[in-house]
Length: 144
Image 1 (cartoon, rainbow, N blue to C red):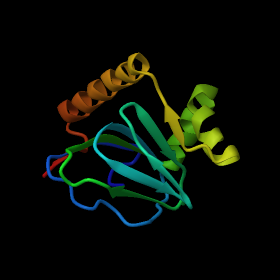
Image 2 (cartoon, rainbow, N blue to C red):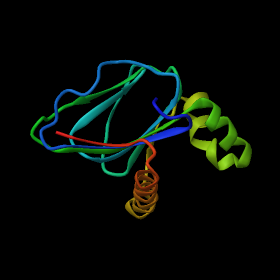
Image 3 (cartoon, rainbow, N blue to C red):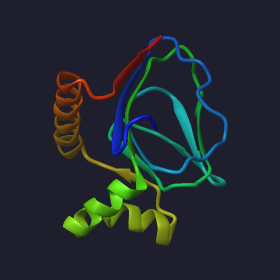
C-alpha cells in the first residue's frame, strides 16, 4: 500500500493477461467484481466470479486471481484498507466488521449480491474514487 489508510483501484483490461499468482499482504483487500471470466483462489478454495460478487481477503490470507478467458474484458474495483484504519472503523460500527468476521471465523470470503444492492455499492465507490482523485490522494486506474 502506498497511502496511510486506504487505496482504491479500478481495473479495466480489454485484453486481460494472467493477473497474479498466489500471494498475501498485510492489509485488507476487497474485490468488487464487474466483468470477466476469472477464478479467484483463497487458500485452497476456488470461486468463479459473477457481476456483483464481492471478495474479502483479510491480511496474510493466501489468494490469487486467474484469468480463464483472455478474450473477455476484465473489470473490477479493489479497495485496500490498512489494518490500523480498519481497527478505527470497527470501533465506529459493527457494520464494518460483519463481512470480515465471516471471512475470519467461517472462511466465507465471497458475498453474492443482487444487482440493486451492488449498484448502490458501486455508486459509492465511484464517488469515493472521484473524491480521492479531486483531492489528489492516491487513486489508480489501470487499463491495458
